[in-house]
Picture 1 (tube, rainbow, N blue to C red):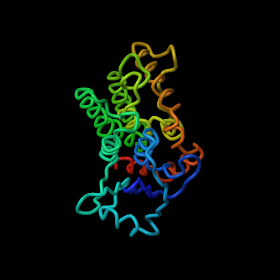
Picture 2 (picture 1 turned 135 degrees about the horizontal axis):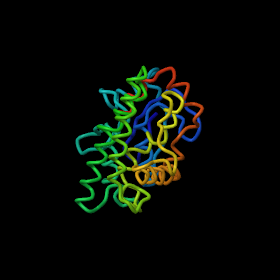
Picture 3 (picture 1 turned 45 degrees about the horizontal axis):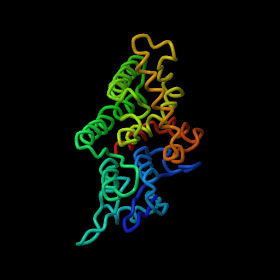
Picture 4 (picture 1 turned 120 degrees about the vertical axis):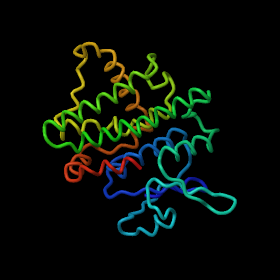
Length: 251
């Protein structure tokens, strides 16, 4: 899939599409950039590219092939950008006149936002993948505890006023985690569930999981998130057959 963004182009690929975001069933990082495009209302053209059938169309933009790829006009010719977090920061900077600002304008808050975007990328996402791929009771239990531990650390860092990471403002840490948070239901079908305590059953972590539910409800209700998801029925068969597809989310 390629998205032409004014004078630039954003290239993504997938194999099966359905619903509001048919292309992002397998590739979570594509959804991160799509959320940014929708949030900031940046004009773009949605163009499909099947890289498995016509890889030249993707590789001509980016010989290394990772997705998403943003093709950026420069004085000495267009150059590619890749890695979704970098693309998202670039879009927020270049289209700074488009609201909202997804990185806070305050330098300290912006640095803190980058810290937690990196935490999602380097801690939460890999542990999600390990949980999804774990086999055997012991390995699954270990992966489950690791994932919940990282998730709780992210929640503890949230502004207590809510509903988003920085309180009232939807920002890049929310964007970074949203695609995975919206897919946690997969663990109910594939790994016996995430087993987050129900309301009133969280014990000493009751406030943590109450804050988590508030965040999930707020993020999931945003049009930019809801409109870039596919129907659940199309996710499960793919992940059952190819559980390591979640590795693509690291791009």
